Length: 314
Length: 71
Image (tube, rainbow over all chains, first blue to last red; front, side, top):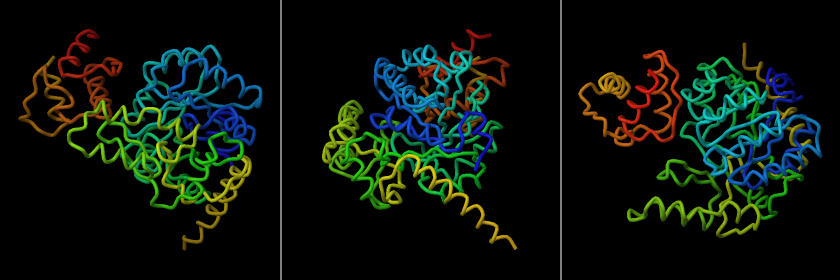
């Protein structure tokens, strides 16, 4: 399987690994890139020194293109933006905000810029500013989420822009992959399934929770803060929800409650106090495999689904 | 300028009699950051200028000053 996004990003299969803060480091990113997809190092809220080290380690382990995901709400966004230019990173993916204050600088440096977009307006906006492609991510995904679902968002974004659209949110196997292509996307971004890859260095408790999760095990919290997050239900998410619906809670108290919780999950494996960000597809993720096996399964599953689809046409 | 922006906002919000002053915040109008992107794009078309979307836009007056600075 191939698509226009492969030539554009210099990859062999149209599969992008979603950036996951505290989770997708050089180890997972280089494994995905070596398997022909686009591996992604997540900058998250980390300082520039950490990201520089991750970029260098990724380069030591793969000579294929890879991406760095920049979380635009990060206090270090500005210095990371400059670092990516200095390091000549092949692809930048942006999330959690509007990337326009950095776009021109990255594009002028020859970096391909692929923003994650939650609406047709933002998609048209970044297209106008020169974006290479967009990732239309529905609220089925884990971590920071938008309001629209993948099924509703992807075709509307495809109609709104003429640059390539990559679908994300709710895709964990070949069926979701094939469906995304049917909606007009030319590739997919997958997060949750890669979280359990052998090469992913996240705490084993995190992988275990994803592997054990059922369809109804995720919940979104933080809508009051304006940037909701999807995670697995546990003591942390129940506590957050209780606080969120308590009328006397201030926004500052709510922000404070969430600080450090993702690190507790990803690094410490703290089942009670950690925030285990996960997509709704966790229930589809049943086993640990190598990144290469995951990509091979996504491709063969999508090809089978696409070939079988013609049986509906009489 | 304020009047032009008031009109764009009233059209956008589909409410021709909406009370809007320079001190009105976008939050009061129930406009989030995604709505602001749409709004700025229609203002760019209207005035034939390029506006950088700033995260510091809080009131309608902020937007008026930003656009006046670009004309």
